[in-house]
Length: 80
Image 1 (cartoon, rainbow, N blue to C red):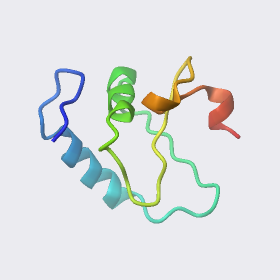
Image 2: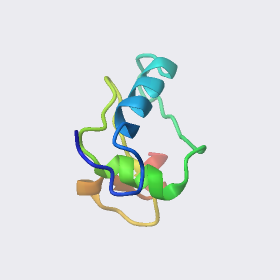
Image 3: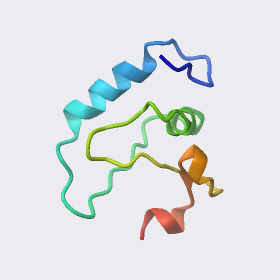
């Protein structure tokens, strides 16, 4: 299991993946979900870990910079 680039426990990825999978159904075309309950460093860390994936969803973190390798996008890309 990949390590989170923060001080989170190793079981963070599977727990969050399971929780989000239960909350999110298969998306309709154009569907967008914003997670605002997690601190920005945690969201960016999750986006950077390629193994953090949800079926049928594309994971991106909205930040002040664009970095496709780390799955970071800016707000103007998020609303397109």
